[in-house]
Every structure is written in C-alpha cells, then in structure tokens.
Image (cartoon, rainbow, N blue to C red):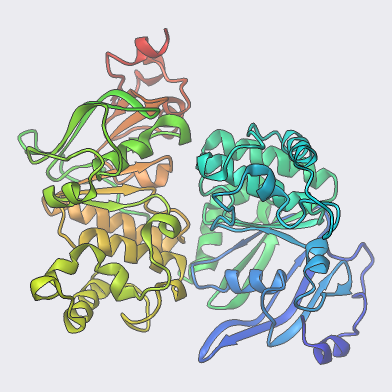
Length: 539
C-alpha cells in the first residue's frame, strides 16, 4: 500500500511512542492524477477510541485520503500504518476489512437485495462450498440490527426502506466486520435530528469500547457535538490538527477557506418584504399524497422564497417532489401561474415552469458516465437542434454559459461529471434545474454534502432567482438552508403544524419540526400556527 522504501526510511515498524500505537497513521502522503495534485505531503493520526473529524472544502483532498486509507488506491509517496503495522497489500480485502471499515456518502446498498443479504454480502454461508442457510442468515441479521437498535425487517427489500433506514443498515454492515477504525463519510447527510442523535449515541458507546472514528462532515456543528480532535485539509495539504474544544467556529472556517472573514449565506433581514399584491406563482390546495401528507395547502408568490421544513418522516420531501411531477396526487391540486401540474408527470411540471433540484444528486440528479455539458442540458435538449436533433455545438455553447453563471469549477464541458467535487456536481444539478428558466424552483436539501463556500454560493443563487421575480421553494431540515427564506411552513407527520415569518428563532423551528411546538412556545416570535393543525395534531 504505502511506498516500501519510504516505510523503511521511517523505520518500517512501530513508530516510537510512549502510549498505544495509533489505530491509523498516515505520514507524508502524496497523490497525483495526471497534472492534478490530489494530496501533497498530507498526514493524519487517529488514536484508539478517538472521534476525529476531517474537514475541508470540496476538492481539499479528503476523498483521496479516504481511498488510500481504505486500500482502494496506492499513495505515490508516504507511509500508512494501522496499529503500528504497515498497511496490507492492495487487493488483500480480508486484511483491509480487519483494519478499517468505511460508510460512504454515496450508498453502496444493493436495492434489489434484502436487508440480510446486504448485511452479509459475500458472507452468506460458512464456506464457499456450503449452501446458504437462509433462516440462519436472517437470524444473524436480526441480531446485528437489534444490537445497533435498527428497527428494520431483515427480510425486507432494501429498495423499500427509507433513506434513513438504508443509512443505518449500511452503518451496521460496516460495524459487523469488527474493525476498530471506522471512516464515516457524511453519515448524517440523510438523517433527521432524531436519527443523528441515535447515531451519535451509538458512536459514543463504541468509542467507550475502543473503536475509533474518522468523521467527515460539512456540518461543522456536528464536529463540535461529537469529535474531540479535528484535522483541516485545504488545497490538497494538511493545514492543522487541534483539539476541537480549543478551536472556535470562526477559526475553523478560516482554516478551511484560507480567508480571514467569511460572509454568511444571504439572509432576508435587510431585504424589503415581498409585496402583498405579488402574484402567486405556486399554489398547492388540499394536497393529499398517500403516506406523505393530508390536506396540505401553501402558496409561493413572485419574489418569495418559502421554506418547507420538516424531519425525514414529515412528508415535506414527497410534497416537493410532487410539485415537480414525481408523484401522483390522491386529492388536491398543484398549479403554477394558474396552470395545473398533472400528478406523476415530470413533463407536465416542466411545461408549466417548475425546475427541480432533487434530494440526492447521486441517485436522482446526475448521469455519472456523461459529461458536465450533457448533464446540465438534459432538460433543454429540444432547444439544442432542429427536428429533435441535438447539435454538439449548441450543447457546448449552452453549457458554457451555465458553467460561467454557476461558477462551476471544471476543465471544460466535456469533463465527466463524476470527476468534479461534490460542490461542483451540485452546481451542475442546479444549472440543469435553471436551464429551462423556471417560474418556480423546487430545491430539496440543496446544500447537502457541499462545503461552506459552495453552500453560500448556492443559497445566494436561489435568493437571486426570487429577487428576479420568480419563486423558490426550499425543502429542507437544515436551518442554514432556511435562513434565506421569507417564510417557513413546518410539516410534522404529513401536516403543516406551524408557519414562521421573518425573524424566527432556531429553537422554535426545531421544536415544530420535532412535533413539540405549541401556541405558547411560539407566541413571542413572528411565527404562528395554522388554525387547522395544532389542535388536530393533538387529537
């Protein structure tokens, strides 16, 4: 794995230390991809039982380091040790799994297999020549799920699980290999507040048993909530390692960005209020979606950004997707400028002027084997040539304008979208949503898995769309996403339970999202609770 000559030069054996050897130690790691320097003399050390955060902007080198720590790639130079011993040879899968497990941001769960089959993939039987004992396999899976507190049927198909359930299954699978060092790459990206609390409680339990974690997240508050040490990478290099308790939020952001001051995402406090006579661009009336919402009504006016807030089980994501034509409607109507969106018809939503930034860019937003230009122009192919043809020159020109407009960092429009950083991939998804010049932009968790600067840029861009006379609906449980909104509608278990105007307080919005809001709790803010929800929810 590591360069053997370098290892020998560094002693080859256990590093000198008065205490136990680190569970993982990378020294002098460099990696190039052609002319691109992905890592430059990088380092990191994780102690037994430690929860160690690795943060940095997209493109800082975090993913490359993870690929080296997990044996997927060779380092060009440097030394990698686990528990004082040199890393296994690349290709020795069993040896690597005994050292390190990784839960990736992009799910590796196989949708068509059961939970039990996913948990013990390639480990279904006691030997390669022995038949699979399905009852025993399900029993092993049930024991593992119970140990981790995951309320999932071991016989269920993975495709029938919620995003949260799939995430927990993947974490349980990583833990089942018995490694004492686990890398968590954005593990909370798809979880609500309760799911995050359950995850963190379990991680703390495992820490007490000596398991160490490398925690990678763009949610900096989670670093302070969970981790004891933080390492910052910037521009492919190690910047600092420090105890979390000794590093303030501003100092951490400055280390990540290299800037002494960072402006926050555009908020609405100093903006003129939306005019009362502004036309309604989006109208949702009496919407009922099976398993998601019942009798929901809301509207978004020209010049307005409305947040549809709620936890994973609230139904807000399904509502946003329904506006974009992804789901059939049982009852109610969705209209854009008075024109109906036909339920379950994406072409209908596009035709009336809806643009969508989906929840998961990997599963719903990108065609990974296609170029940036192809991905960015998927919604406007009918405009790129006569008689149903697509002219490459028009595709390139259209995409180049979008690359400039969204400040997408890419060598060119022909670059595969999979080669971009997460933040720039998300910009491609936003570019495609804006390619049709929609009247209403629906953005579902638009800053999921992007760094602080990309988050700021994307939220400012959404705000600019509304300021230009259009409308935006941000569907999210992230308070930072919602701070650009003129108004919030909070959902809990399929119903709107509270509405907040400008000046809302974090604790009141969180309380409403968690189903504990009441009139007394919101009386001292500019918020109010819809008359048909609070009492009804209490029945």
